[in-house]
Amino acid sequence: MSNKKLDAAFYRRDNVLLITEELIGNFLVTNIDGELTSGMIVEAEAYNGIIDKASHAYNGRRTKRNEIMYADGGLAYVYLCYGIHHLFNVVTNQKGIPHAILIRAVVPMDGIDTILKRRNQEAITNKTSNGPGTVSASLGIKTLHSGIPLSEDLIWLEDRGIRFKRKDIIESPRIGVDYAGKDALLPYRYRLNESIISELLRAGK
Image 1 (cartoon, one colour):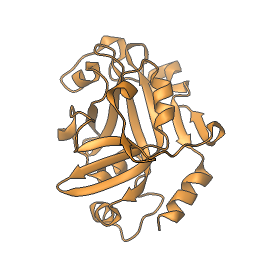
Image 2 (cartoon, helix red, strand yellow):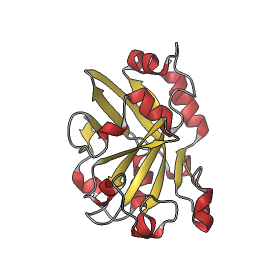
Image 3 (cartoon, helix red, strand yellow):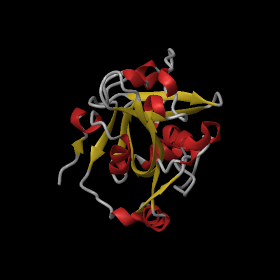
Image 4 (tube, one colour):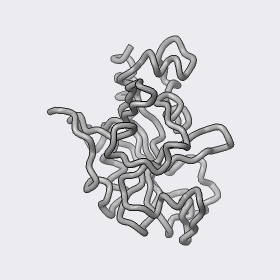
C-alpha cells in the first residue's frame, strides 16, 4: 500500500474517540525548513469538546488561542504549555464542534539525523519523542503552525497501511488533567502496547 495523506473526511467524523484510536499506527509527518521528518503515532488523547471538563473548549469557552478548535476538522491546533512545550493537536468534527486530539508520543521513523539534532541526542531512545512536548520538538512543530491545514505539505498525517490488533491498543485516563474532576477518569487516552513500542524503537536503531 502506498503512503496516503489522511483526508478531510477522516477528520470530520463525529466520534473523536474512534478517530483517536485509529490514529495509532498512522504517521505524523513534517516538512519544515526543507527537512522531512516523521514518527509513527503510538499514543494520543481525545478531548470531547464542550461537555469535556478537560478540554480547552469546555462549556463553550472560546479564546484567541482555542478558536481554531471550532473550525472544520483537519487543522493543526498547537499551544504552548508551561511556557516552553509546543503541544500538537488535531482538530476533528464539523465547524462549531470543538473536538481535538493531542498527539502524545511517536516513534521516530524518517529524518532521524534531523530529529537527533533537534533533540540534542546522539541516538534515538525511548525518551526522544515520548511526550507531547518532545513530539513537537522532534518534528519541528511550533505554535506558529497552529491553524494550518493538515492537507498541505508542511504538516500532515499519513496512512502507511500499518494496523494493530485492538488488544494491543490500551485505553486509560488522560495525563495531567486532574482539574477535570470525574472527567479526568474517562478512558480517553490510547497507547500502543509497550512491548510493541520497544520493538519499533529497536528496529529503528
